[in-house]
Image (cartoon, rainbow, N blue to C red; front, side):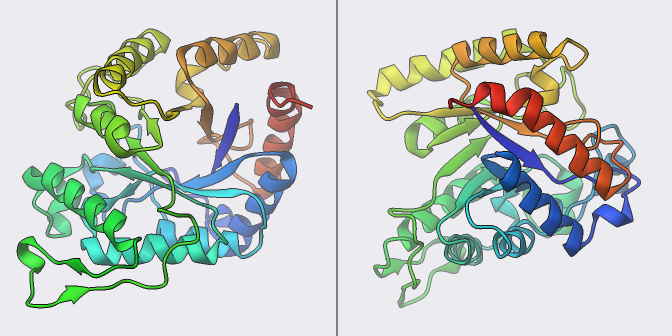
Length: 311
């Protein structure tokens, strides 16, 4: 099982001590030393106040800038965009940012991608929310083609009389791993068709912003995964497909450590290969100090990561 650590401090109200470059560097270094497989941050460049006032509202640093910075002070840990909303960026600018991060991290990028679900944020950025599926597919197509280093045709509203070449190529070829976020059938289909992993984002039933199948517990996950495995068999996919879930949504953290380890085994049986989230007492929404965050990471590593990691 691979464990990924999210940066604390971004929940409303933010914790200023934890939203600094130094704090991010120290957390990334500590995560690498503690045995985390990767570290991640998400993307909300223009969150609306109604969403910020809700239970999931939070602020973000730019994922590509933030992860390039923490990659500079680490050597092994993967840097995961969880998630970058590709519909918010011009396809070629998105492709250049992702390729650059893979190069600057010495080939450690995992590109977690999503459609975006906040219409107000899309409106603020001038993005046609109703076209986000089309824009998403277009951006991922541009990214995969740009990674070849060969001339590619521009298309759609970006068409010109010439072609585009994007160099240098990323270090991971044919491209960095693409992990598809979301719980919709379209997201699961994309994961099978061209992704290397599916990252089902926890979703409450009848949530105001998420008109997709719910993901509240292991039974929901099992049902969603079954459809994906059936579709993979239907289209003849034989390559491995990772599933990465959120710890605090899939694991009852009030259970004993032994109980939590048993729950991790249940997830493994469903096909889960990675778990991400803010871990330990210092890394939840209530993290108030850098020392508390670091202590929580170390404790989680000793109690959970090491027992799940082969010697």
